[in-house]
Image: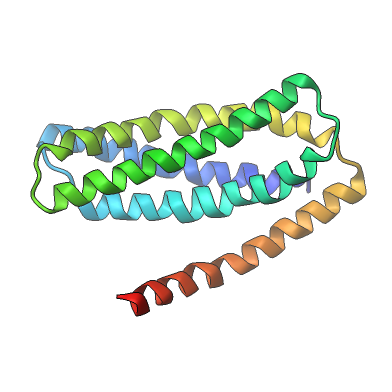
Length: 178
């Protein structure tokens, strides 16, 4: 398996969650109310799975290794766009968290912001995934030899093995800090 294989498999689960986000936002518009708990779950999924786990492997392993390669100008530009898009996603989620908290605390005006941020995420991720799956990922493999690909894949598996411990260490630390 190529190192992009697990990343593309992860994209399929992210797409499923994005559909749920899109559906929830559409229903919330009809009902003129949001389920803040659903937003909490969506945020957790995006922060831990899509960003920390998935984007973590991209940034901390794939992009890191490609930084040392002579990428074509086009591939270098796309890689930087993807990094910037990851930052955009984090900013959008942070704004969603703030708006959801305001909504949960009774500020009905923040519902529009929650819905807008959910829509931004629902629009953002499909385009971002297409850029990775169809353009950057296939091109990126051309810069790596078989040994580098095997080492990268092993490092990605190790990255995944550590994630559950990282997540729940943070949960305990946050609870202890309260």
